[in-house]
Amino acid sequence: MIEALDLREIIVDGIRPAYVIILVFFVFLNSFYALLLIMSIPELWAHSQLADDDQLRRVLASAALPPLSILVPAFNEEVSIADSVKSFLTLEYPRHEVVLVNDGSKDGTMNALITEYDLYQIPPALPVAVPTRPVIAYYRSRRFSKLLVIDKENGGKADSLNAALNAARYPYVLAVDADTLIEKDALIRLARPFLLGQSVAAVGGSIRVANSCRVDLGRVIDARVDRRWLPGIQTVEYLRAFLFGRLGWNRLGGNLIISGAFGLFRRDYMLAIKGYDTASITEDMELVVRMQRYLREHAIRATVLFIPDPVAWTEVPASPAVLGRQRERWQRGLIATMIRHRRLLFNPKYGTIGMVAYPFYFFGEMLAPVIELFGYMLTILGLFLGAINTAFAVLFLLVAVGFGLLLSVWGIVLEEFAFHRYSRPSDLAWLLWFAIAESFGYRQMTLWFRLKGFWNYARGEHSWGAMQREGFGTAAPTTAAASAGEKGTVGRS
Image: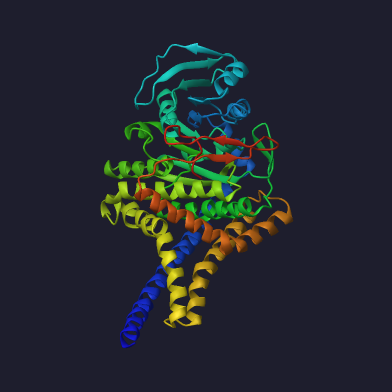
């Protein structure tokens, strides 16, 4: 009996300091998010002043806009590929080309392209700076001279982007997904830093949720908030992540993520670091971290920026199973990237990247699920053993839930006042409701998915998992195959 009491005392004495450490961790983490929010406000104001229509017309008339190549990997996109390509070809921009890569599709993707765009085969006289899976043939279009189609063996999204990178003619390349819906003037907005005298290595734009939006010919013509639980909460997530998270990093100079569905890069820097890593399952983040390392190791004063007003729309998972595969893969890819580039951690040689950005992603993003799990476990155990009082437990929940709710609401407020993409009052009401609902069930579910990422990383898992899509408008659901041997092309948001 005495031994049992002693053991209980030991456990209680251990719970209290551990609980305080976890509480301090979450206070610090959420306070840093709040700092990013504060820093994002002047950034958002400055960009909103440059984003009006008069400014945009002057940009369009400028001869200083650099020509760019749009890189489009496609796998089993037979149903929508013709409309997708047309939407890229008709974007407002003085000079651009579209380089589409058919990544060994098993359906009629290639035949649909040949028929719709009157393709003819050209000699394979293009340089190969980055090794890829074998290319079967190159095609040009008789209808659109700025369309190049590459038919190659399956190698996954990163391998397809590398093939497109090799073939691109222009000094800047824009990586997109075949099912990404880009707003018509987004390219002009995305290229704006080049007119402001900035040395830019990469620029990222905003990704918005297209579920339930009205889509016509590859364009969102009526933005709506999906009333369903999963897509609705993800709409809030995306607003929060893009409208203050990445904007805040602009001020700190520490952007480590540019969305693989909508990112513009300098081609010479891409070639210098040998393009995308085909072994990575989150090739977009790994590429940006590697590019940031390259810039600092070679003392190149070029920035990686995020601009909020160029917008692309993408479909997000509508079922827990598909969401689980996506978030588990994201976490697994984050772990792999952090481990691979661990030399950056608290390394002053890399400036803000090594001393602030990388440690934030290492501790605040990669390890946060594990620490949050221990927080929940210690709360339950501490209450059961009387090691912590109810007021302390409520404080932990307020930190875990209250800060997240505050940041989500601020993300909605920033969207409403700066861009107002959602014109209906009912959409604003739904966004506020989903901001509240996120902390009750959804957050705990995604926590489980991210914890699975640790387990699967330890097991050496490298598959993408099948990503079921509903399609835009009235299109039937489609599946992007993504096994280890046949990777899909669904990008990371």
